[in-house]
Structures are given as C-alpha cells and as structure tokens.
Image (cartoon, rainbow, N blue to C red):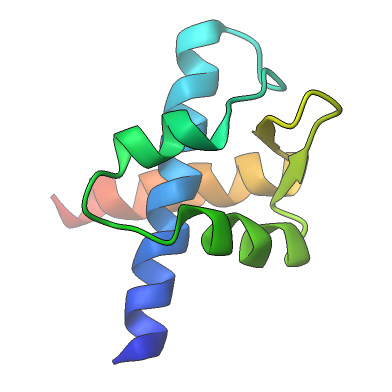
Length: 88
C-alpha cells in the first residue's frame, strides 16, 4: 500500500545520500535535490521524501540548499544496508 511505497522511497533516498557521502569521503557533504532525482529516476517524490526524512531528523538541508544525512540518518542508512546484506 501507500505506507510501503513511502518506506521504499525513504529507504532509497537514505541509501542514495549514504552512497554519495561515501564517494566524497565527507559524511556531511551536501547534494542537490537534482542529483537525488537523477539517481532515483522513475521513483519520483524526492522533495516530499526529503521533507519526511527531515521531519524524522534523518536529513538536513545545508545553507547552500543541498541535503546531507544527520548522524541519526547515517545510522539508519547503515542499519538499512546491513539488513539488505542479510537478505542477500
């Protein structure tokens, strides 16, 4: 249902931000919405998903209007990655 689709989108955006941060070697490096939209082609709703994640204190918008994971978001992304690894 709708709740499951929302969870899939939030998990995907967390995963994408974690991947981007790992590529930069800087955990607080911000990324514009457009980059996240490109990574999630066909998923849609990136801006709304970021708003949900921000309400949950898992992401934050930086002064330059880019987005980054919070410490809680990094933990959530790591937990998500671990559960995905266990399912494979």
